[in-house]
Structures are given as structure tokens and as C-alpha cells.
Amino acid sequence: MSTFTRTTAVTAPLVTVTLNGTALDLPEGANLAAALLAAGAVPQALFCRIGICQLCALSIDGQGGRRACRTFVRAGLALETRP
Ligand code: FES
Image 1 (cartoon, rainbow, N blue to C red):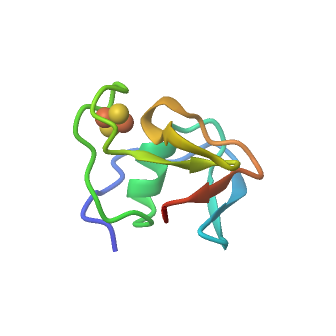
Image 2 (tube, rainbow, N blue to C red; image 1 turned 60 degrees about the vertical axis):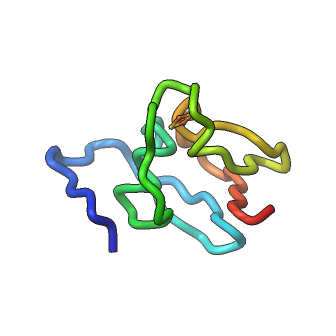
């Protein structure tokens, strides 16, 4: 359960991504870090949200060290939070 509360309606269609192998539906085109937090899918809060602190780093489609706060949701993203 996320401690963040969505304050506006989601109008974007949902697309399926995988997070550590588990399917997750997120709004297409949304900021990936915000979408993961809103879905309660990641436990840590973000710090800078502008690509500086690296607290949102994860593997995206096999490339490690990618910043979720600088990525938009699209169908089929393969996300890994494990090292
Ligand atoms: S939240 Fe700081 S780099 Fe993404």
C-alpha cells in the first residue's frame, strides 16, 4: 500500500509492464517513478525527481542504473529493482 494518494483521475490507458517478473498495469505515458509510487510498487520515496540523486535507479529492459524519474511508462517495460 502506497503512502501516496492520487489526487487526479487517471485518464491514460493502462499498459502492462513487469516489475521483478510480476505484471503491473500503469498509465501509459506517466512518469515511471510516480506511477510506481502511486501503485505502491516501490517502497522508497523519491528525493530529487529531476535525475540527480539516483534514488530511483533501477534496471529497465536489462540496462542497469536507469532513472525512473526520467522515464515514461510504455507497454512492455521490463523493470528490475534487484541488483
Ligand atoms: S529521484 Fe533523484 S534521480 Fe530520480
